[in-house]
Image 1 (spheres, rainbow, N blue to C red):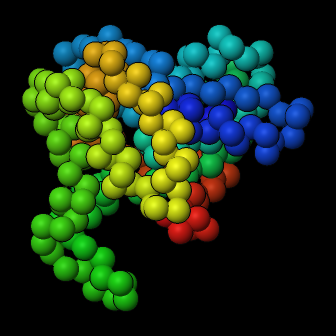
Image 2 (tube, rainbow, N blue to C red):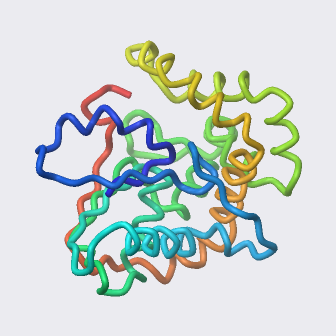
Length: 230
């Protein structure tokens, strides 16, 4: 099962898988084609809660006793992490996970205040890293500040983020999917969901992460950026 922030990111990877491998591809609530009703509790969008929702969905889609390997990218990887620790052993069994492009949430917040020098031998406190990862604090700001600003011009907002995240080498690939992201952000529920996700990441997820440090099954953590120069 694949859990990316937006399933479109992984569609082209399916051709690399053996034909006999079954795939369930899910959009996280608030991303892609998925929405989620907003509740008053900040825990509603915690990675634990979303992971529980995804496990429940899998039990409806897969036969009893099915063994699955979870693959998560970025926000999806964080969700897979907590989902694996708290999921029951039946009716389906999680036998392995792959976490792509993930930095623990607590470390990521720390990095917004630091810059790793090129020689990787020191840390320099200052504004550059906080500015570079501004979307973490911006999307986590109180409702409805980010939602109002994004919906006023979601096209330029997404174009800016894509331009910052992707190298010139891969720029042409971004253009292929950018319009799809823009179409998704026309949905107010998607924008609200994405912001609630980051709000959870600034609050309840930090506390949950301290308790969910042990992986009970075979785990692989990798970066999609290593070999691509991204």
